[in-house]
Image (cartoon, rainbow, N blue to C red; front, side, top):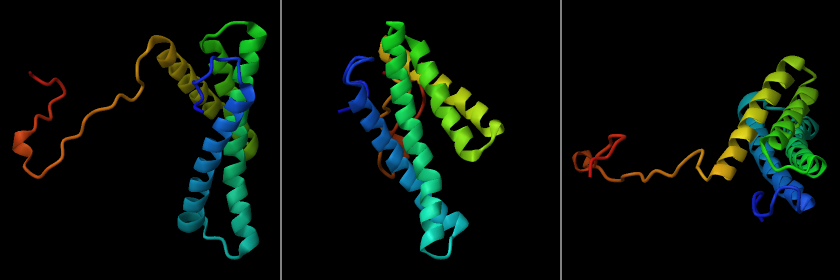
Length: 152
């Protein structure tokens, strides 16, 4: 199940589970990078702590976004961008709590609320935030037109 398969305000637990899985996956990838390339902890306990430090906030932020968005939709009885703004702001505040820093929490909350509103606008109006672009493959680049406006 994808996040936008069901209408907003319905199947809240499935949406929470879907977003939490994605957050957990991203958290594990970031933790692995952090463990191998940056902090390089020595021993099992510091390694587990490094994984928990990055993975848990990602999972909780995803669950918070889905829960707040669904609750706002059910409480307000409206399906609009404000629900996603509230969900993004609450998810961003989780990162501020995890780092114990207002300087981190406020910008992340602002950015995630803006990104969530743009995502909701793309769902409502049918446009793609990152449209698919066909990539040309091959070594002879003279046969391909790489201009933005193709002339057909």
